Image 1 (tube, rainbow, N blue to C red):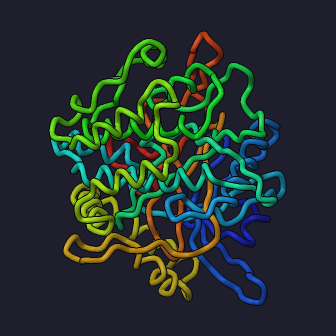
Image 2 (tube, rainbow, N blue to C red; image 1 turned 180 degrees about the vertical axis):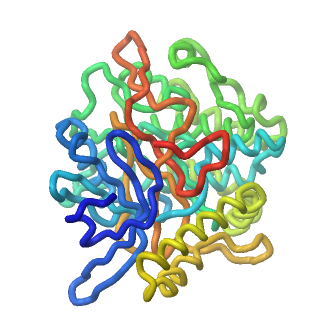
Length: 422
C-alpha cells in the first residue's frame, strides 16, 4: 500500500513485485506541470523505510534515480521523478508491457524454436544504441561521466510487445569519478562479465561490449556462452579460457557476424570495438529488411508465445483504471493502447512516446525495472531471474553470494518457469 504522503500523488493500481527492501507497483500519477494538471500510468519503485535507513542502500537507490533522470533515450527505460517522502524513497518510471529477453530465449528453447538471426541482430543493435547513450552521458555541467553499465545481460533487456527494445537496470553502473564499489568488490552477473570486470580491474565502456557478445551467443544458441557452471567455474573460465566460437551457436551465422562476435568477446579490451554505436551500426547492417521489419518480426514472435499474458496485462490495467479513475479511464486506456503489440499483419511499429527522461537500474541491491511498452505512458517492473544470479564477488577469492534484494520482474502475471517474484 502506498503511504499516505505518496498517495496524494500516486494512486496504486496493482503490485508488480515486492521484496523485503521495497516494491514496484503500477500507479496512476496525478501531477501538475506548470499550470496544467496531467495523469499518466507509471511504475512506482519504492525503497521502504527500514531499507532506507541503511545508508549504503539509500545512497545507491538515489544514485540510480539521479542517473535515470539524466538519461533520455528511446532504448533506455525512462524515469520521471524521484525523491523521499516520510522516510520512503521512491522512483517513478516508465510503465512498459513486454517480456525480458531472458524469458523469451528460454521460452523459445523450450518450444524448440530459434530466434531469427536478423531479429537477434536488431535486438542487440537497439541495446547498443541505449548503451552508447549511457556511455556518452554527461552531468548537468557537461562533464563526461564515463559510465559503465556493468550488468549488460538478457535479464536487463526488455522486449516490448510492440517490438521496441529497452535497456534497464543501471543500479550497479560505474561512474569514473565515483567510488561506490568497495575495494576488491565486483558487481554484475558472472555469465556476462568481461574478464577485467571479473578480476576487479579498471573498466571502461568496452567492458559492457563483452556482455553484448555473450548475449549474441545466447540469442543464437539459446544457451549461455560459458555454459551452466557455477560462478566460480565461470570466473575460472574468464581467467583462463577463450570464449567458444559463434559457429558453436549458429553454423549459418554470416561471416561478418562471426567476426564481430570474436571482437566483442576478445579477452583484451583493446581488441574490442571502440563504441557501442559502432557495434549497433555493424549489427543493423546484417538486418536485411531494416529496423521496422525486424521490429514487426520480433512483435510476431512475442505474439506467438506471450499473447495470453499480454491480454492479461492489458485487462489488469484496464480494470484497475476503471476502479481508480473511472472518469478518466477511457482516455488513459486510449493513450496506452496504441503502444500495445499490433497484429503481425499490421505493417506498423509503435514509436516511443516523447516524454521526460529515462532511468538506470540495479546495485548491491540488484533491483529494477523489467517492463514492456505502453508508449504514451509507461511502466517498469521487477523480476527475479533464476540464473545467473546477481552476485557480489569479493576480491580474488571470487566468492559469489546472491544479494538479498529483489531483482527486476515483468508486469505480466509471469509465465511459468520464471515466476514474477521479488
